[in-house]
Image (tube, rainbow, N blue to C red; front, side):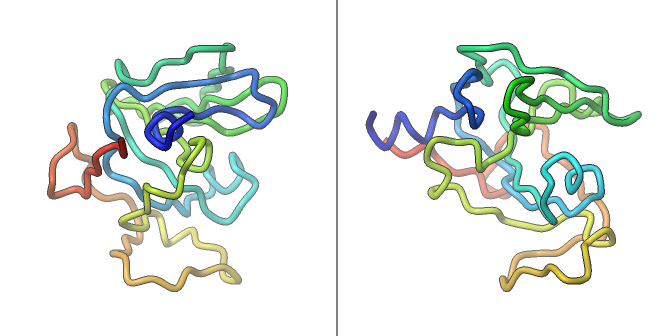
Length: 152
């Protein structure tokens, strides 16, 4: 596998679910909301977005769980890995968990959201923009939202 392949592919811990990105992710960021904390079992989760049509599940079948009135979360039924979230008000997008990429190192987060839910004993040392709640979601990648090309 080349570095470009690893940046475009990902999957769950047990390997039963594999996905491929057909376009460069955009809007990478940290989420501190309570749902993400519980979904990931961690104080924060890192997500990036791609158009739903560009998120190809190539092996396995993620469980889709309606986690709230605003959307659903996808995870592996076998190992429990948190894979993605779909938000109703952005039906053409999917937010995938960046750490499930085979090579997540090239895609750094660009902001923090839902900091009002931040767990007091956890913080990051960075200069990224911080939003106490959500922030406007882009509907497509643009240079203004830190869209990054896939490495080749």
